[in-house]
Image 1: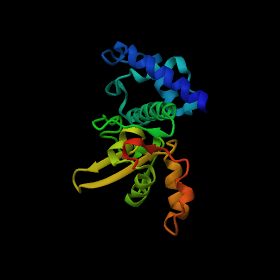
Image 2: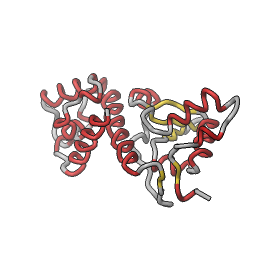
Image 3: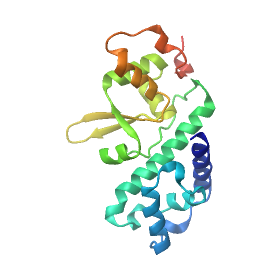
Length: 198
């Protein structure tokens, strides 16, 4: 799995370095077939050499029925890259005060978030993660995979964390025992934000 994440990271770097003009032109049949195959295929089985071409596709050029699954796979790839980059940083994170949180999830639907491997967490679970990591919500968005989706009509916030994020282990601990009792053991070995250490 780590090898797959590293291969995805390499491909994403290549995609960012050399965007193609695929988005400007209409999709050819081969590209359309590639997109259809990509959205059905498990991420670890994706052909690495085709990832940059997949990411360069303009969603507006796709048939309407394919756009949601394309958005989910694309979000998943960018999120896995973000997780892999975080693992290179180790357990102590030093978030910049004005860091820019990745914005790939902006405007996404709940279905896209779930298809991309995100799971909804509660406000209490987020509070638990913040306490254990000494990270602010903004830090969790910059350094980890926390996404906050706002419903403009109801002003309701929904929180999501990718299941491959190392912080998801804390969410699991909270779900199993955090509501009943919390022990110091759970704080050992968690990633932490250095700027918040005392």
